[in-house]
Amino acid sequence: MPIPVTCPGCLSRFTVSDKYAGKKGPCPKCKKELIVPDKSQEVVIHAPESAGPKDSKGVAVLKPLKRAEFKLSTKESIIGGVLAVLSLGLAIYGRVGFSSGPPTWLLALGVIGLAFPLAWIGYTFFHDDELAEYSGQERLTRVGICALVFAASWGLYWFLAYYMGSKTLADVEPIPFAIYLLIIFGIGTAGSLLAMELEIGESLLHYAMYFGVTFLLAMVAGLQIASPLANESKSEMQNGIPPVLVPTNPPATPGNQPVG
Image (cartoon, rainbow, N blue to C red; front, side, top):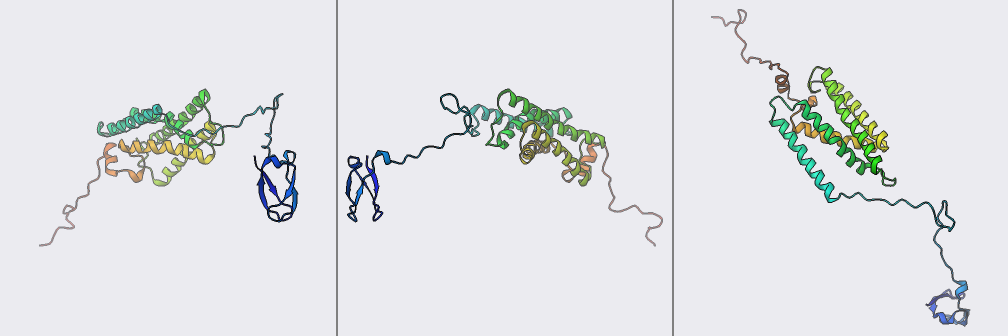
């Protein structure tokens, strides 16, 4: 194996055969006599010694965590696709199958049925890659608790709507509705933060993904959730109150009859 040599006179670098190790010879450039290094002068760079406890043989006890990249299997992809098609189909059925809007049982089925899979997928997306991911029974338990909180946030929405004397909060003014929405998001974010131990920003995105999907499906089903999206006349008809009709030509009265 060639031996790298540096001339101490002209600082030229070159290699010589290992058979000349430890022998003297002239530099091919400046002709200054030098000694070829031998194996005892070879510099060996060792890998950094691992910190932490070791066993009796000097082998590290703690092993580094390996980052697992998120990748859906074929089975998970099929389940996700079937769930998406089924959810969209139920939303369309709620819109065209009921003249007075989707029933409560269908809405409850949607928010409860989607809570667990969306909480599971959301955790996979938003958890810190540098930390170990929950798995097995512990993950099932934590995702289940988080899903219950997510579904309960929509339960709070329907409770507020019932308290206001309506099926939805579509008739609530924008400012109170925004306050109610902040409360609902606060509950959902807290559920993700405590159950899944995500950062606050990731917990907010975690719940926002669930809320956004269920919100869009509710709109497809024809449920009027917020006052800016509500059709006032339709909302009145659904509540049994006919819209007020204002005649374009008011009837003649003794005070406004034409003269002559």
